[in-house]
Length: 366
Image (cartoon, rainbow, N blue to C red; front, top):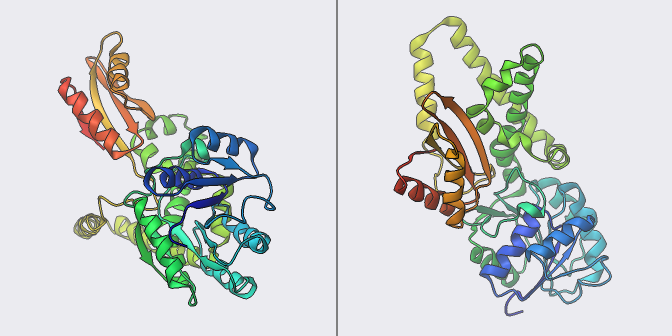
């Protein structure tokens, strides 16, 4: 196999469709076949150009492909691969985008046909928007893409997959399955549960004081946006990584107890030192690299209290061909107010910022 030319993507949701768009835009892939149990997902994937053809069963569409990407829920990866393996040739490479690896690899080592080349993978990127309608060809740009290849993986095929992923902008990293699962429990699964707990906690207060969610808009909404993720997907992920998630939850509970103790003791200096230490630690997080938590490309601008003030802003940005993915009125004052605008990419954010500053708006990046 000289290059990967034909690809089948099983599961054309956000990741599957985003990968399809990226492969068509940035690589030599010539044909992409798509399969999904949801007919509307296939229709959308075809409409946006993420796939070229759809196949409705595994009897057709797999025999001639160079690469099969399993972009199905984690719990379905093993059964799906075992179902399709007899339809694949020894030349076909199989990979997945599942967010947990240790259980998956352990199961498949015992059941996988020895002729197949299976290279487990996990792109450390995503969005709170699910489904192919949220697909983005640039989703993998500057994103860490973890591979956990099996010991007997054919190096030539591994190199072909590496080349393909690098062309869609991914930064490759290699990990052992257990190490991978412990790290993602900390940096992805724990934050999701924390965001959900925050919403749930404020929701309790909102039952008796309706002003709670009203005052929680803006910063609180940004902090908890990942809690809007697909419940089915997150239930699946969490139940496939229970051991490490519980470990991280216990650690997080202790951190909360530490803060509780400092507050109870009213120790200003220790509290200040704790905040300062955490602030410095946060600065070590890479700024220009995508991670598992979806990035926020947002700005806030001040607008005057005049008729059509919002319409003028949106028209200015729209006429420049820049798409606003979300808009929120943050504050209304006597002489004007503030708008929060969100964009799909860093490039669109930068273009909108320059456009608005050029039109003499006061702009602050978030």
